[in-house]
Image (cartoon, rainbow, N blue to C red):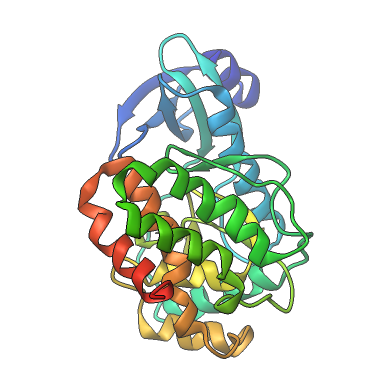
Length: 285
């Protein structure tokens, strides 16, 4: 199906498929067609076509806001040779413009301010290779409890002792003591760390590899700080367009608990200590 898809879309045949550096989950390729066109492909023999279709939907939703660069989705499908695949516009890397971080902060804030419906998403998708539940909720706190923390805690429960399981129950029962409802629902990238943006041909930030859903904008900002953080100019620029609610610093670790739990479930006990540290902070009673 891959060759047919390319021929139907571009009127040219596949000439070469060269592996390129990518993530840990999928294989990545630069496809070159007989007319010189280049296409980026992610492929995974173990994944179902729904895995990449969910990502394609997220990319399209972000692109439709018109707020920030996102590669155009060409097609998602399956192929006997490569397994499930996602074809995207090939983006040639360029030097970052001088205002890269300021523009990035402004663009992400505008994306978060674009119209979005109630919390959740039109379909379940994935965070890395983990299923991500997106059942709609009217309340952000209920959504984060039921569709983010609770499923990850359930997967990880065998790693906790009796005291820690008690604290987990306490945390979920009292989540509203810490989290707040946002002024508006926001379309989120959902997995926004430094590996999930690139510099586009315009010298500005383009988003890739989303785990998109509608939630609280703070959750995206928190994720940017989890593995080292972005440049300080990014955060100052974001606040100029979409100021954060008071108390964000007190909530940030709760948002990132979701991602640390996911890493614990995917990659093992190396993430147990930071997970338990956050649980104790918010459920010390």
